[in-house]
Image (tube, rainbow, N blue to C red; front, side, top):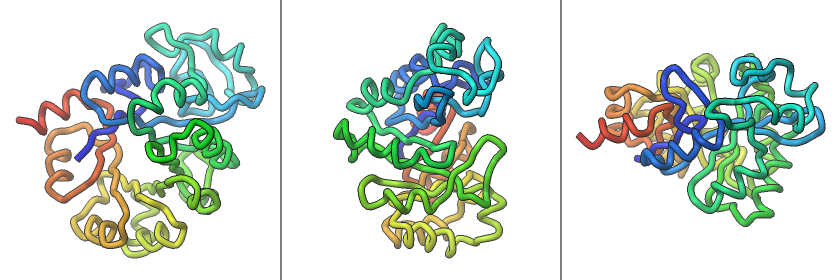
Length: 242
């Protein structure tokens, strides 16, 4: 079972998430890859940012869509790092590790895929998003957007506990298969041996979010989960090794 750094290795509570330093820390702590979020800022640049605003994660304020990248890059996102551009993260980390790109806005999946393919990173990247009826407050995307790019680049379907409760394990796996996805990303609360068996029977990888405690990590390992997405890869790696 691999560990993927959730927004790098920001720890709990999170600090400096989705920054170059956080990504480097995740790899230094033994993560096999990194998970991060992308959206578009005011001048069209695709940036690595979870929220629709920069208020929570930087010393600045304002909606990302109203700021140009030169404006956004003036602010400290932690560790004296600016909010990075997707292009820079692909260039630096794409050749080094697995990258899970979570799309936070409608219309970004295809461009993120094109940027990835131009760099020859098809085999080390997955693009994921929630569905359009399953949006968290900071997300807007759809599984059908992923279906449109799934034959050219690996994709993964994200789901909240509420979505999975409505769908059920069988329908979730069937939704992934029908959209040619390579993986499902269920929340930790929804992981069961039945879901894992169904996914693996359909040749789908299972990446679980967001696991920060030792007992849940060990349970996921015993169930046969492929990847854990965690804020604390170094801590969990030690726990799983003991």
